[in-house]
Length: 356
Image (cartoon, rainbow, N blue to C red; front, side, top):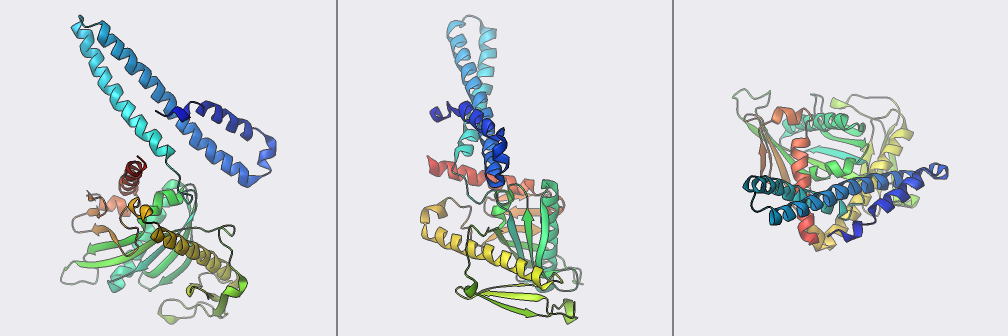
């Protein structure tokens, strides 16, 4: 098993030689690629070295069991150690297999986090704000940067829609399974009878698209400028700084009015539009390839209900893997690893099954 990993140390040394070459630093894109590849190969090399060591210890224990049958106490000790080593061998095998799975090309990318109010009126809009705070706090713990690209506030602390660029290391790989309908069950502040209301919010995680990923012809775009308006219709400023960009071939529309500069709003709107176009192309490609559907958690459809946040019971349920935890206050405060890790593990396990 893992015969192709016998040369892993040689590959690691070759990457280290590249990194020590001063000429590489002058090509920043290539330098980042080599740094990323080195990190991946170094981890596999570390796991493989431990795997070889554990396999050797297992063989030694098997030899001892064959030759020391008369020493009952030693046999018991060896058997106990043998069980521990066998378990560790299985764990290492799985960890190595996961790291050898074909990589999602978007895993290293930054993302656009889009959160929109669904059913539930003002309560849904308030939950949009709650989810945005939750993801922002999680981003902080990961050392990521969050930049609001566009928002549509309702004036009581909620948003009909908010779009943010989240940038940092491995953002897409951690958040890609957050796309879908997030449902909230709680008693709104405005509810006098104490009744629990159910509202829904849609989250979309879209990988950032570079210009090299997707070229848009200038004649495919239509720009409109208008005055920004805030909650309740009051004027935010007196210049035509808000920008609406329409991609004519697809009819996709993006508006941006958060910046006071028309130039900045235009740049942000184009950034969001490029990501949405690439995401649409990816979705269409996934739809065409039925095999890829099988390897996704759920259908990957953004209209699919993925999670429920039940405030009266302090409960969070992920419907895709039947996960329920009673630490809602911590999750809403941004401690998302308890819900993200099981989903990532589930996906990796499914991918391993289909790889066999």
